[in-house]
Length: 625
Image 1 (tube, rainbow, N blue to C red):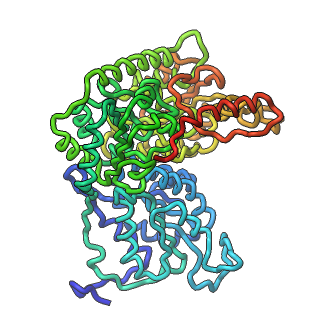
Image 2 (image 1 turned 135 degrees about the vertical axis):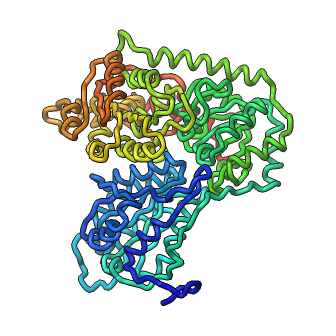
Image 3 (image 1 turned 90 degrees about the horizontal axis):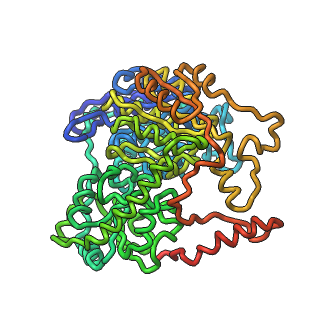
């Protein structure tokens, strides 16, 4: 075969061609060309070591390969890396056929839910089927073409099984185009059969030419913009909900300018935390189930809501009870799917362009100062509550106290990482943003185990730009026990983390939900686990120390402050352990209603009373329009 343009070709294996192509992909970020792929995470097995491993070795300088300890955590790290880079740089993950690959399913789902790009290059069974059934093959008795890798179709934006080396000439560019598309962004999966990985093909040399990518900015439709301006101008009490898409669009400055020019308060989603600094006068706080009294009070009174870059999930909307029944929504989103939710007037397009053009069309129109003043008064009340909530003294240790300590002592540009359990809610409610884009609360998939792995991935990304800043991880004991091996990864790769392990004796936030719905504590706290013959506390300090980290245990928030200072000064990963109360010290203000399924029939009067209480708010729930 010859290149149509140059008449030249190079004979390579499929695996060699994939890696060579990836090494020649670049992207423009802030006017500078950088490699699109920052490298990858890999655990080798018989499904990827002999062919893909050989190819990656040849490009180990251009595409550094980080050795993970668990495929799921590799995927978490790749997602966090992409989030740090605002979806403009990507990591690949490679796993062996069978369980190695299936371990990536959860992290693929996390990336899909959060609209984050990562490329999975995973082993597969033999196309020839001559040795079938092979080691670790999941046989489907009635469909020999179906295997474990087909499960990824549900949790990826792009999926392909490569059964001939020529197919990547189309498939690889399509996968990257999907991952870089603001509307379709998400994980991409390529199944690589073990025999096909080693098959050779004469690839046209033009396929490997340097390619420079740019993120598309979709211009909103002029008619949608005009309709949005008409609706927005009709408002008396407008409100902006700022989501994570504001940061991905690079639209923080435009958001601030729009809000200031037209005098509109701004509230933030969990993914949109750190759009505005805490001290900005129009920042009315976080909204929703894990939000603030200030933001939720405004949401109840707002008559027109401009939702920018958010998918409006139930924690943002209070399961759609946070707003007045007759409130109108305008949704600005790069994705049509998210822009059209709940009868919103859709503006499909890039957030930065939309805000700029909306502002031009709004002209000098500014809303009543009294609405802004009301928002500021409500935020002042919330700030006073948070100040008391995070203060420490003669009361039980709490998540909020630990958050307050770190907030007081960290650098404004340090990165904060938290995920499932009680900590995301506590960080969302109590964290006072010091600089834009510095908070990663993974609550799109609410995935336990993301914390330390995501911190490692974020630190790899951060070290490329801000090596003098820190990545700070908040994790509970439950998430720690679920996935902690990337403490070792961080030490092994010299990617320093500061990890706070806040031990409340189990899954305390779910125990709280269990109790709040009338149920007895059961199987969440270690002390209430019926099969635990002799419950005991884990020595997290010793465990972290065994993985090479600096580790210490503190008794209270005052000691935590001193330990945090030592961790800041240290040159490698530090783990600080503090016990917190499972029942006391939770943030009790700021919550909206959240729909949970409760039993209609029960022998327990407490359960039935809780069911009636939950159902009492259902009349406030919007029905989609």
